[in-house]
Length: 225
Image 1 (cartoon, rainbow, N blue to C red):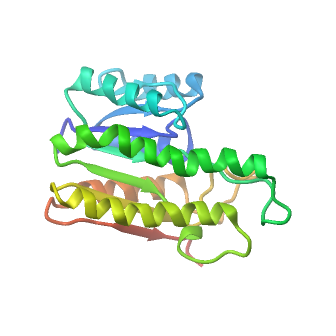
Image 2: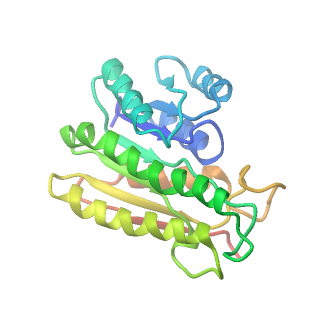
Image 3: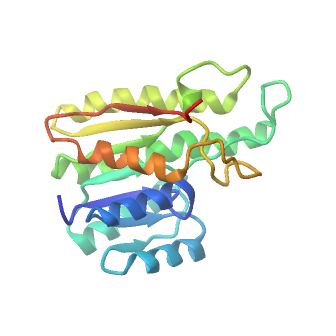
């Protein structure tokens, strides 16, 4: 299990940063992608240059993601897992009150960003029978009145199940992580009643550490109560 390599988008804070920390603690090497270069480089420095590399870039740019995974492969010889975690929500809920420009920005990251991670990483993952992990949501498992955000996560869940079937043809695995409310910068104020990013990171590591004969296709976790 030691010295495996994981690519994480949305890695500079929240779930992405917590997963990077958990992965390094478990002996993984991590390639970290996010737009905030300063935060990303500080995290990589904390994790140690022998275990982490900062790859500043925009997950909505396919070429940027291809460059990032190429840099990981050039440095560490390949890729064992990729975590399509970058995403965002909306400030105006619902369809009638929603902002179409904000929808476009959200769909680029929540849908295209996930597709670009898979497209960029799959050739390298296939060489090692690797693992894709996608950040879904409780909102992608149930209906939420008028929620365009929720609909974007329904895409992630459906796509993740389809991708799992595609990857199974060559021994790969795909897992959708579906958390309920998580106490991250996604919300304007702290939410002590929510899950911690570390809870979600633990779910990611559970999927990645499962026996090769066990494909964990979804983990659904919500705050107690």
